[in-house]
Length: 126
Image 1 (cartoon, rainbow, N blue to C red):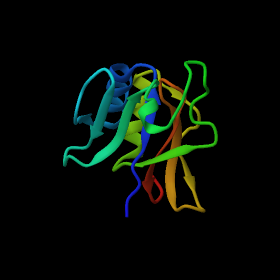
Image 2 (tube, rainbow, N blue to C red; image 1 turned 60 degrees about the vertical axis):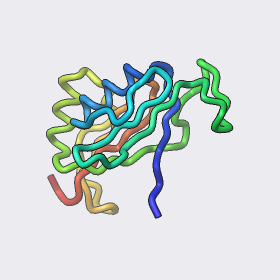
Image 3 (cartoon, rainbow, N blue to C red; image 1 turned 90 degrees about the vertical axis):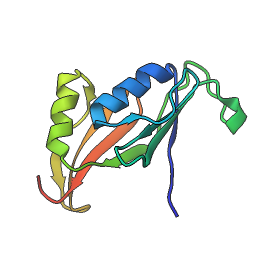
């Protein structure tokens, strides 16, 4: 079993570019309404859908807060490298990289262009 995340966003191309740059990922679909963000192996990381994607049973208005009560964890090979990219991008960094002894990994939190919280982490102390 595997969970896959779909984020409803205001601007699919801009959100796609943000995630590609932050994570060193690439487009697996492309488009103004829907996008798939994949890694180099083609593994799906995120699905992005324009905010008015009511065909999925999700009804969001432009002013609906995004990500309330949800934090999306993204495992990466080098949490410090992704943190530096986030800094270079002037991304909305919520926390600095820190070791979480309960989860046995080093993580930081950044918000995407729509305010979704992304916890970027690498297993172990880094």
